[in-house]
Image 1 (cartoon, rainbow, N blue to C red):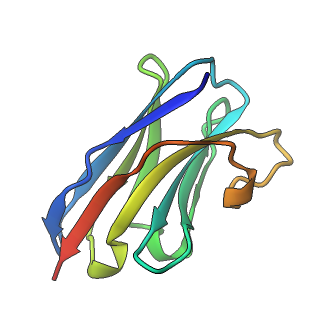
Image 2 (cartoon, rainbow, N blue to C red):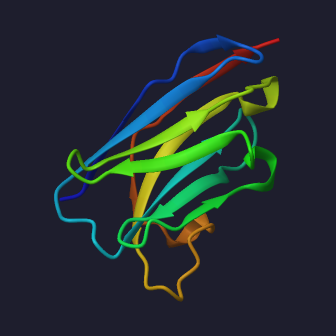
Amino acid sequence: QVQLVESGGELVQAGGSLRLSCAASGRTFSGYAMGWFRQAPGKEREFVAAIRWSLGTTYYGDSVKGRFTISKDNAKNTVYLQMNSLNAENTGVYYCAARYASIWDPVVDRSGYGYWGQGTQVTVSS
């Protein structure tokens, strides 16, 4: 059974940085994509970033390009989201997600992800 456990969320001032972690277990993730999604109060869950486990190809939402970086540690089966220059719009619950993805499968659509973590709260104060 796939398990995803997020950590690292906290209260941070605008302009600050945070690194989120997602510890994945339950299987090998070769052929999988790992994504980060954010859900703000009263809004839909939206795509933030994703990485293809085998190829290392990365994808970013338009609002975070140049500020956020997704990466992985194969030995630890962990995916990270480094977030810099944070602003109030980045506030929300951040969820880690996993899905099997061939090279033709899109990885920015949340509907394709079958495994989700419990989320970690990020609050950016202005």
